[in-house]
Image (cartoon, rainbow, N blue to C red; front, side):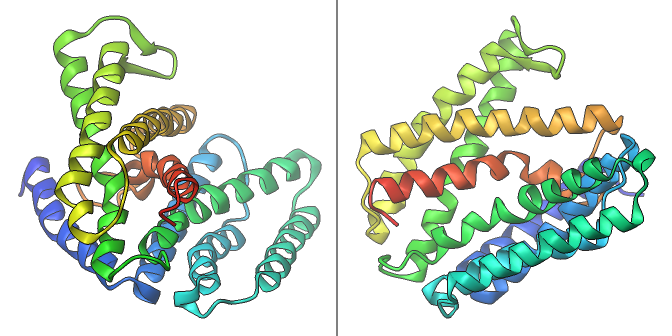
Length: 286
């Protein structure tokens, strides 16, 4: 029987090239992959909510989470430029259906307000936040699909470097805990080391990759990008740890063998992608 470490390596060796290929192709294929992750992530969150005593409307929430990336791509020029009114109408209809379903299927003891709240959280957290990856991949002014792929990997690489250095520095230096009640293993030294790593990684990535595909960002813009992404990524990591701690589980799921669930793998990116997209829009890249 393969060890857990072997399984992790095999899954990563298969999953990373497949994910990179899907990002390169983009379009509806990428939206569909994000929809799958949205649905699975929502189910994982609803499972944790159930362990915490809530009764989410799992079917409605799963459909809503899967619809978010698909609707996001449909709004983009690359996806046909659907009128935003359709999105507003669809979201309002989904919310009214969810609230009425809770009203007719949950008693006061079942906490219908909590049911609607956790259901909506699953849609926004697992479905809507990762959909911000699509405007990065399909920014209309980029020179090529390769440029879109490079832009997507800017926050991913920055977060990976930040997480890796945070773990390494924290384990070597130790020191005061960052949030002892929320995530006991994280230290201030690790958080600071990871943030510095992210601030270095972003401009290095810009020089090595973005300049070659004509994505124009100044070194100082990339330093600020690295700072923001590193901070919010670590906050996102701690936030998901809080959810798991409340539910009493080590991992959110088992979707990625040896790596845990979708929420475990994407916890930082749920926070990072909206911030990255907003920052790049402000500086004129999107």
